[in-house]
Image (cartoon, rainbow, N blue to C red; front, side, top):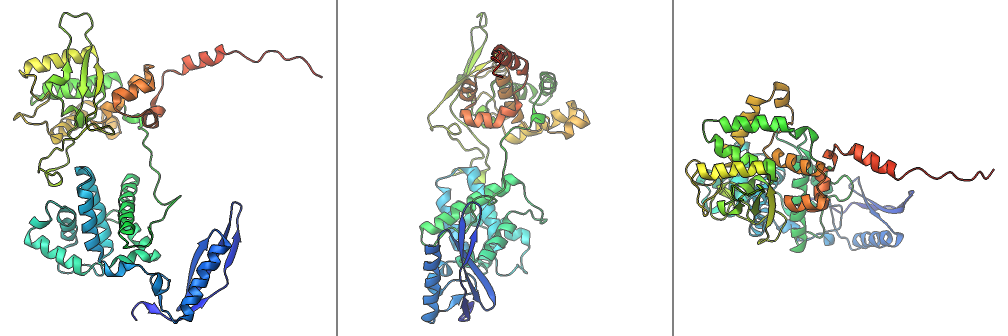
Length: 463
């Protein structure tokens, strides 16, 4: 029988007494290769060892892939990985948004390439990856794959290992190494590795739920995925002089400069996410009367329009409408707008002749402002305004850094974190995890508070 053996030796269990716990390890040998299974208690180890002994007495074959008796195997060998991955992608499609769909497709693509029996000889590797990423794991486009892409997918389906590959620990390690690496073999960014591991973990739990695998084969606990930090890099934050120079250059830009200046100013003064700003309507801005003493405005955020690409939305649109991040679909939040922002938005609405039902920030043809236009304008502004050293640094490298700067400024101005979290659309723990390292300028006041408590009173001499 292929991949099976009857040459089995079962050894005495080993006991390791560590500082925190004792581990009982069952050991056995298949065709000269040693296998181990650790357990927390002697009873569990003895029970498992008894199962192995009973299997040998029944004359049962052992799998060389998993090291276990055939009776221990699941139905994984009857399920092709590619077929399972397509089924999983379809199940995820209807419960996730565009960006999650795209990330799921990328993770499944890398995994599928690692689970091919042989490497393609009649197709280019880049075409195989494209066929998998853009069509195989895209529920909406799969049936519309061009003939050459469909031929590649047929080949992949025939040349993919079964789900039994996930029952081989060595193969699991090999697949994870491939998924955690870039095309040149170097380690991928920690955030990418963590995201791919999370997607694969959901896929494995899906396999367990549908009785394809007996247990989730992915490693758990310490070292299962690299640690990532959500904290903002202080070097990315803009000081007022730098922000003024960048926004000033954008305003002087000949093509759509004033419109983009108002967009960036909204992020700098009110701290919304880019996808929330592009979704704003004129009616979402509450401006005070021009002769009012208080010139603060109010901004209402209730919708986000993240740009995910037309291939990953249900309707084929570039943007995907959804509620505010981390909140109920019909939730809203109101943010005060600095008097400077009031002036900028009032001028913007007047110059663009906008009506209450219009989008606040529009593209040149009247549609939604494209993310590529926003990013290109910001990138050009940095190149024109910043010194070569500043341009090469993280300083304001992303448009999102305008939001980071705003929220950090609010915290440094002494606004309570609970209030900043409300305006930002975050929870307080998330807010502090991201921005706590950036809070500065309050050390002198904090020292004075500590000194005000005074020293310990003089204690009587007990000698």
